[in-house]
Image (cartoon, rainbow, N blue to C red):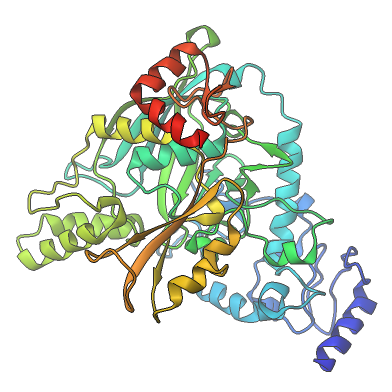
Length: 490
């Protein structure tokens, strides 16, 4: 402990007690960094060249298709090697950097180095991107309807066509937080508030996700818990989306679809589940003029069943699709068994007739409609499986540890047992999630009936639901809000 204190005092003498200065590092044969501070014992060999530049001068890498992904920090695989032209994630070097990173604050409690080199660099890119967003003039784009097509790349049918895709229409003014939570997630068939997600825009590589915004005034405690907006288990894999993201909503701004994409033909990547990395490419097919725009969410068409939750990404699902068509019964049954256990197929009958190319348009519309007519997901209380190791475990949670200790006013901790007995037992498992009955913040909200983000007013009864007018309010009242409104008024 005393040695750590002496080390900290020495580092504060070198860099300033506040840590605000960012001097170049040049000890022995170490490389000079124009912005990032490396720990004196860190092995710089494992870090990408970009981290030795100043973020203001950084030119992101592009793949051979001209796309920038996850800030463009990773190099591109050179010609003549497998995967040439694509982003080189270099997982071996990533693992070595993680091993070296135990010298930094979040893992080692080092107050002088609270952030890893990647976090320092990307944090500056995030701030730079926010300033760019704040200065944008979107004109009438927020009032124009976008027709989007979302495709799960690299999953093909027998004719070489994209097997899984959806086409839908939303307002350019919809917040990207609502777009992900209330439209894309249910539209594809994923489970809301289970895994984290992120957008990366191909034209500039900027990344947006359910993270928090912080700056030089952020307290040490907040800094050590930097990722606190989403508590999804896969947030531990933040490196897979470029180490950081512009918060979808914060006191710096609530960003909309129009902030990310402004022209027809533009594309961006949406990833679901950082660990498994299910990737989806979103393309702007059309931007309607204001005179032809309603702002309403509309699910237009689609194809292909959603992959199972907790799989291993697009490539693995493509392989499982192949196994479903296999003449070997054991291969087919293995995949069907995984589907039956998957959270997004829970409660459904999965038999030998399951077809991965099936898509039910009516079901997709119903899922999106249900999501629009509910409060925002509580990212800080994402769905989590918990296994009981002793009889008093549930009581421990109720007494303030675990998720119960994070509850705020208007929030409820819900638990669902994952077995037929439906009750606590040693070795049993349940899923817990924090839900909210509070009104969503108006900035970034949608009409509970049609999904438009415009001209919203709160329900005068429950004061929680938002509507764009009396027509939608009456329709939603008759569709089920009558009972919901009474419940929320209690």
